[in-house]
Image 1 (cartoon, helix red, strand yellow):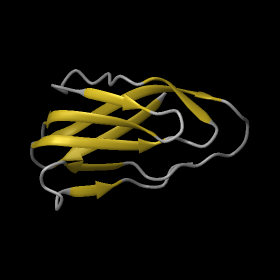
Image 2 (cartoon, rainbow, N blue to C red):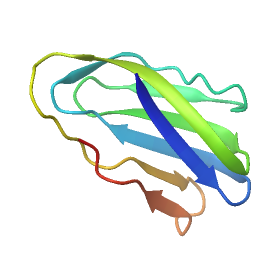
Image 3 (cartoon, rainbow, N blue to C red):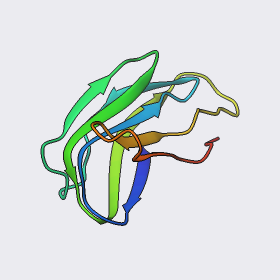
Image 4 (tube, rainbow, N blue to C red):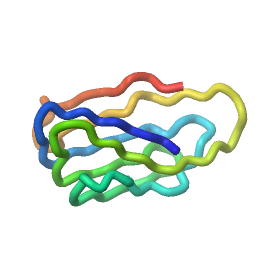
Amino acid sequence: MVRLTLTAPKAVNWVMIEDPRIAGFESTRCSPTAPSIRGTRTSRSATISAAFFLDRLESGETVIEYLARPEIAGVLTALPTTAGAMYAPERHTRGTRRG
């Protein structure tokens, strides 16, 4: 289970969240489980990332979860998750490095 926790100080319209694939993992189901997310569309690429497109992200904390299957053993890392308002490029953020 991959869990992304987003904290927004205020509501944001038209948000894109991109979560780079962890090396050695394969995304198996890419649908968010957060009931507070409206208008969500997802995109998945086995070689690049899981992307979520939200019509609106409400203020406060939102959790998005999706399934990923490990393909190899070892210590694995991924680039940070990024999120931003699609039509306001100045509203952009990056998560922490994962491993």
